[in-house]
Structures are given as C-alpha cells and as structure tokens.
Image (cartoon, rainbow, N blue to C red; front, side, top):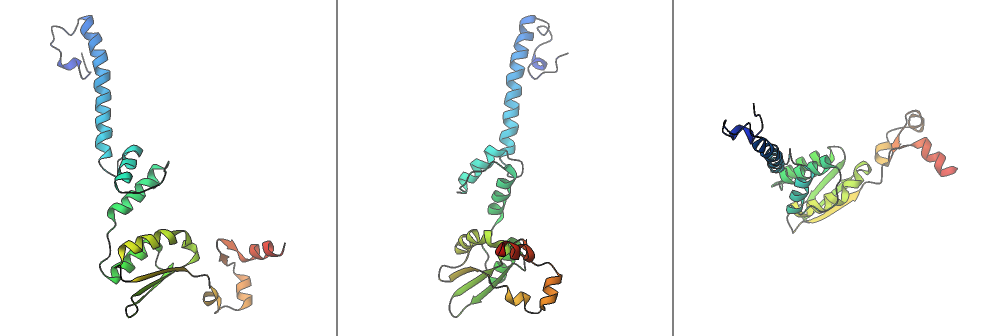
Length: 187
C-alpha cells in the first residue's frame, strides 16, 4: 500500500489515518530531498561524476584559477592536473610533451653542458606556449634554464618544393590558405 520512504515504516494499525497519511506526504518529500542531496554529495566525491559545484570546489583545492561555465572542460582540466606527474627522466619529459603537444608539433633540445632545455613549438600550438612554459618550470630541475620559443621560420619545411608545386597544393599558414593571405595583403 505505502511505497514511500516514510510510510513503509508505519505500523499497519495507523497507516489508514488521515493525519499519518499527511505526515507521510510531507516526510516523504523531505526524505527524497535528503536522498537526492546524498546522491549529489556521493557523485561530487569523484571527478568523473561530479557536478559543477563539486568540480569548482576541487579546482579551488587544487589552486586552479579561472571561471568556467563548461563542466566537461573543467572536468578535463582537473583530470589532467590530478593524473599528471613530474617526469623523472628526459625520456619521460618527451613522452609527456608528446601527449600534450603531439609528436610533430615541437622540438626539444637538451644541452647538458650548458644546463639548458630549449623547446621550439610550431605555430599550430602557439596557444599552449604559456601554459607549457609555466608547467615545465615546475617539472624540470631548478638549475636548468628553460627556453620556450615559437618556430616562425617555416622555410625549412617548404624548401624541398618548387614554386609550381607549392602553387598546385594549397598550403595552410596559421589556418589560412596562401591564396587568401595574398589577397588580403594586396587588397
């Protein structure tokens, strides 16, 4: 007869009284709200199931600054920080860079004699440069000089091609075709 949280615990003798049915209605709403709050609290304990407020609380604890309206973007950033670890060797650093930047989007050069790590980023990932510089500064030893630059010189990539070959295939420069660039420059 009673399928609500409160009503199923009432003795059979009093279940049919109007007053107890009224109490059952009110108490069931309160208990359902409590159960929903418990589910949200349980979900907010895990990054994969957390709601936005739980992710914001975790981001504050992890000292991640910013404003987010997209829950999945914040979840991805928190997961990245949570699962990230500092590389112990240069090979692990390169593996981390491959995962973050992509294998062909950077060149790393470690000069052990000069204690210098030089990273050249391609233009397609220039927006990752500032974060990469800040993150690498925390990852590498303090006595190594870090230099993160952008590779503006794409001449080495285009050198093997003849002028006619370049005209035949559309080459993108910063997401724009070369024909579009020349039209914007001369118009």
